[in-house]
Length: 347
Ligand SMILES: [Zn+2]
Image (tube, rainbow, N blue to C red; front, top):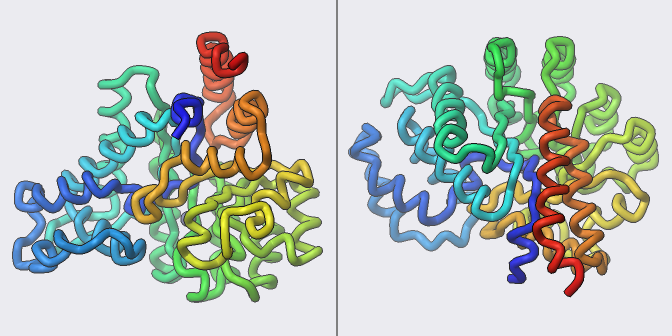
């Protein structure tokens, strides 16, 4: 890959922690399970270590099981942050469902603490390299009671001074449950000042729940794969200027979109309308991609010049959930990078 796409400063706004672990990190977790106190009677570990990492969902399940202690969650989070930073990501919003585990004593609160401690440690060890924030995920497979519990945690953590918890992500298997059951939770989140990033219309036939979600409205849409096909949805999105987090490779590997080309992927439809879209990975480990690779695909399909690609990555700054002082800092970073890398634009 051209160094330009790796060097280019980038913003990642849609990254599920457990789906983002690289194969190396998974292997390191497997070898460290004993140190992390993950019960060794879980014989899956030996078997899983020989698996090919082709199946994204199997990998996701495996990584979820491997991150079942405080130390493992912290280790995984730090590793993922380091990998994004090495790929030129300057601002990252990680999302993950806080999980408890009776066998290891992990609680949902400890899970959040582990993620936040990893972020804090990484930022102290690598000053000014990357800004990281955390969105607590509500998994639609786990039901409303669990969701309310997660919301309460998010409210509690967001209220802490200099909190890196900025919002809620709503995700999980789109064919399970009805998102309308969660609307009151999202309203409460908004009232508490939390931002909302909501997975929507990943499969066809969810128009009614999509319309209910869009009337909140959310601050950002995850995927929104079929929203452009419904006029009412399209109207609400354009009117409220709700940005879409688009994940090219992930959609193809999940078989909701046939290819990453202009012909098939909705990213280009919205971009052509002048509507904000942000290129994201979803799960760089599970889908075997990198953010720089996703940018390269999008830029090549759109025929973007390097200058246009630079401005496209810069445009994502407007849609981060962090406060205005962070946005200004990022604008400065983009300007400085350009001044130091003029050769890319004159070649
Ligand atoms: Zn996602």
